[in-house]
Amino acid sequence: MGRFTDKVAIVTGASTGLGPVMAKMLADEGAKVVVAARRLELVEKAAAAIGDNAVAIRADVTSEEDVAAMVDAAMSRWGKVDIMMNNAASPGTDKYIWEQTLENWNQTIGIDLTGAMLCSREVLNRSMLERRSGAIINFSSTAGYKAVHRKSHYVSAKAALRAFTKVVASEAGSYGVRCNCIVPGAIDTELLRNYIGRIAAEQGNTYDEQYALNVEGTALKKWSTAEDVANLALFLASDAGKMITGQSIVVDAGSIMPN
Image (cartoon, rainbow, N blue to C red; front, side):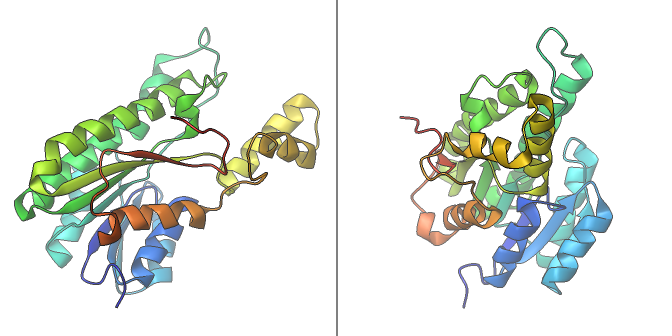
């Protein structure tokens, strides 16, 4: 039996990158999984890779109606939600603060922060509080510890997720619900590779030169993989992490080492 036999999980942002990897790892250890994202064709592909223990649903986490429908998908099929992986995120568009637009700011905050609130609120009300059990995992970024140029919108959202995590953990703890935050650094995904390629072009570097510059600041001189981050998420969601709540844990190959 796996760590998540008879458990039901929802994974947002399950179209590309970390999301589908994490959903498959949960299912491989026995979980029933709702995979959700805005691009239905991609979450259907993620669900197909899992099989009968997965349901694909199109959901925009900034929409209360979509979030309710997403949780309905879990409740109607399996009757509960044990694990909520708030993985949906958007980097927004890079802009210096004097160029920042309200649309870019609000859209990024909406997906990266408000979406986590809506998903957490829904699973707490629909399942976790009544059953007095559950694990909510939020996904921040080491950008939330740094003054990353042209990313005031993203940095602010990701920093706020750490504070949000503490509040949820404190309020829901007496109901047996835990909430933690994973803080990845660079994850070797298509999104990051595209970003490095763009920055390399701006700086007049080759891709390999830009990669070397980016990993130079890590203790391990490499990027994390999606599996590396998912391993921590699964630990925190499992009974092995039952006494860990309200924490923000960095997975970034030793790039930052907060107190």
